[in-house]
Length: 325
Image (cartoon, rainbow, N blue to C red):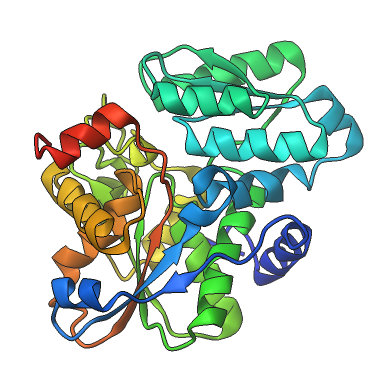
């Protein structure tokens, strides 16, 4: 398998496991958004914010938990998250009767914490950021005999993410490029696996925040870079390092990678809110922010972006609308 953590058979199997629980999400075109992007680009928006929990992470959580045997589900699972992965795992655990513990950083988005608890998860708030919450999660899993569902380093999770792009490419086979947010890389790697499995030529571009550029810098330097901290309002992509299962495929398969500013993320969020009237968080706006950087390079092409993550908290949304970000 080389750099590729899963095969197309894994994606097809994940889709079968998800089929009875998740409806296909809409793929929509907005002429006003095409006009705003310009350069003759026909833009398609995949509305993963219409999933349960408002993010593609519902696919990931369910794909991973449906691979577990009955005893593992009975004991329960643990995950580290800033919110969307945790909500996806909590939602899946509720469907399958598996107890769920989610470890989040101290000071995490309180609305996401409340949503995870409402879905039945036990939420543990420890660590200064996502990567320290991962360490807390590993300790609790050892102590309690829980199965870890990592947000990236899990083949079931990546297969679940890949069903997103499989669906998208079936909905609009003419799409030539995707511009996708990268926090751990499951979405982008999943897109490349789906395209390869369908025999499609597809250019996949990654986007990170300049305030959390670890995977961007790892990709450009050809080695894993670890950052000491992250500073971005897009908590869904606020990671400090690259990940074992996805980094090789990202290095091999991405057509390009950009790091965008906090201001560019905020402007993309405002644009999506104004034109699509969909609520988007920072990570959900990253694809459009990246496309605005890449639009000369992608001139005249059909391009897809993914809105995944409609879980922005009220205080951050107010700052974005007031243009204080």
